[in-house]
Length: 552
Ligand code: FES
Image 1 (spheres, rainbow, N blue to C red):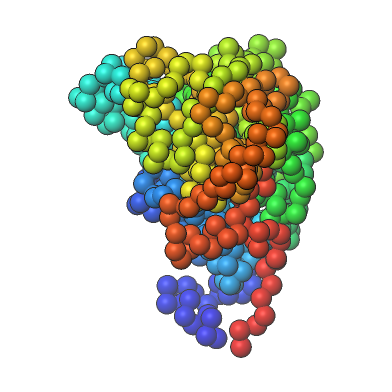
Image 2: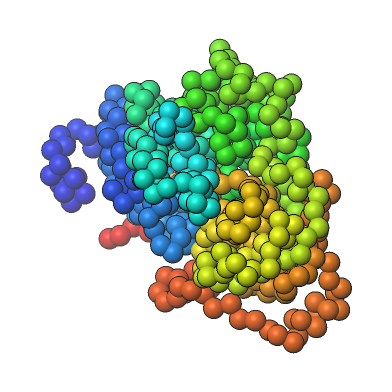
């Protein structure tokens, strides 16, 4: 009686408690997460669908992670938000859940939490913003912003122009309209079968996004009635398909880290070696920034994720499950409507679009590089290191005219990994030093234990593991050491004899004091795993289920 009586204060008639499916709508809406600020509207459409299918919906909030405004970095809070989702779901009397997510970390956080509980689960992503516009041309959030920031630093763009671009870049509700982390993860949700077809691409303000939300509300009721938990949909095949599609999309390097973490929650074996293998023979098909020229609106009109799946054909396991059937079922009638935006498999934009996993004495546990955006001239490279110890050191010295740097140098940032910062910020796409920008240099090799924004590009090696703060060899590099990269051999070497590295380790043991400490940050640094394991907390891995002991 107490459960029913209190819930009825929202105007619910008594017969809604007749045993029909109770659906939680787990919402990461927040005005401080601009990319998710429209999700309360979308939740309404999920509710309509739940009611139409005979369920009863309850919307509830969880911690939201606004990529552009949170400090010191949203990744610090991904695991915290996942804990909130997990505990909210387990503690609440819901039979199934629809996750409303969008901005970069909200998707993995919510899916990680839901995976540990393993109820019937569906995802609705917020969808991308309309194309950015400036001076009659398209501009992409993130990607164009980084370029314009360099233009401002090099004196090629004035303040007025910058402010005008600022007003035109985010013209509507939604997530970044490049193939950044939000769009890459939304595509992964579609491919992994947790979201309905077109979830990966419909613009946030297109009415078809609301229709998708409504249909998801109907679908989740069916999932509950069929007793199909999340783990019955997402299998090893789902991860393999998602990684191959991410390669064809030229998607975010962050997808690697998030999928490793989700697999860890589901107790599915997935390693960096698997990821390298799955990416190897997949060309870049999506001509979308940052690896291409178009934006997400164009991608949707060209056919979206389904058209990519169709192009990939034999590379995809069509038997993989979705919330409505199989992946193959979703592809009937799908066509590629614009083969410049979505390239056919026989005419790709680049021969490889995914992520290569590099190994060697700098990163014994692996590092990643985005093949869609690497300068071909830098795929094999030897150059002297210019080392920065942490983000503050980088900011203080990168534009120093006396910095001993040339276009052949390799910029190194360390102390910015999961434990070191803490939270592994998106600082890995180090800015080109101003004096090189002024010489016309637009790309150079960069290496770090940090991450980078999915909207970033360039020749950037990321996620070096172990990180410096965990004793990784990246912490032993000195200015002038020669760094050698050979992408085709997947090799990343520090050309310094082992004996000298041993000497450095003994001579100058370093401590990498985190810039942010106390409270939750201390829990984070004590329990976060390295990037090659997905940077989840050691105590959160695995499926703990939905059961709780009775309260009374
Ligand atoms: Fe939210 Fe890019 S900042 S999706």
